[in-house]
Length: 351
Ligand SMILES: Cc1ncc(COP(=O)(O)O)c(C=O)c1O
Image (cartoon, rainbow, N blue to C red; front, side, top):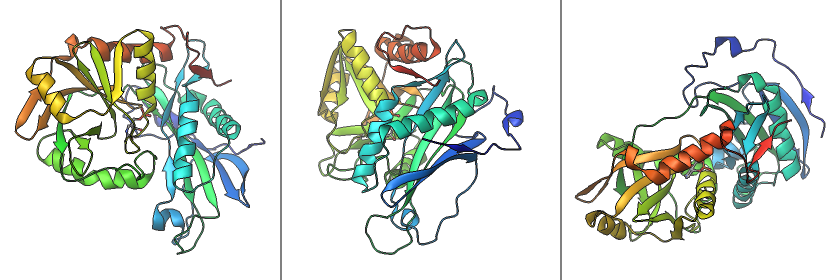
């Protein structure tokens, strides 16, 4: 695969203070782009970060035929950048593509594109532990037509931006019992923009009431737990870790997968099954609910301090007492920083 590289004449790097790089604020100098036409990908290029010219009638704008991924590249102690299990992101991207009737991006092309853009932006990778180069592969439909049919043409691009560790103070959740993010058979398992636009209202309403995020429950009963905002959810009840099973409405989180694998490897009991809010309330009342946390690429672990359901407020133990979530956080950050040996061969060097 030949990638034509056009370098920027005006790097933004000198304006960046690597001690202050909030999540999603800065983008790096270049982006990888390729186009799909006549049933194949071509025109592979890396160009200075810039906007696209979009036809007002493009199917991305009119019908939201667009998907994305989110992953992190980190700098190894040896000066070689690394990706963590990029295959999980590539596979999920292609599942999203299939669901939205978009073309597959072949694995080798995807990985080469990732490596090429990360290698070119090597000076943008922050070195402090927990910080990373956030990488966002995206695909959108470019055909101009009002027909509600899959586009014939697409653009795929990957842009990046440096991010510092995403420390959240423990957050307060409330169950949402009216609005929904996703239903089995819908598009909840795809990373497509419409899911996120559709979730904004519930988040805003929860914030107005003093909560940080919501717990999505499955309609129409609103008993079964799906996830929290844009994170997968984990509960520690007694000595067992529980996480909702994938029903088609829950995103197959990469961090969720890392956690499940680590827990199994450490012989910690994990149950991946339907979880109902009533059983969480019951465990809480019996004093068995030890930890609740969200998993996601941005923060790795988000500790939950409180959950409100109807008139019950469940107040959870302090973060210092949380053995499982602190262990998982340390495993992932330690692995990325090279402090913990990569016995599982999860890290892929960007050579
Ligand atoms: C709806 C939703 N659930 C869960 C996650 C967590 O997924 P991951 O661990 O791959 O970041 C995300 C973030 O991408 C998300 O958008």
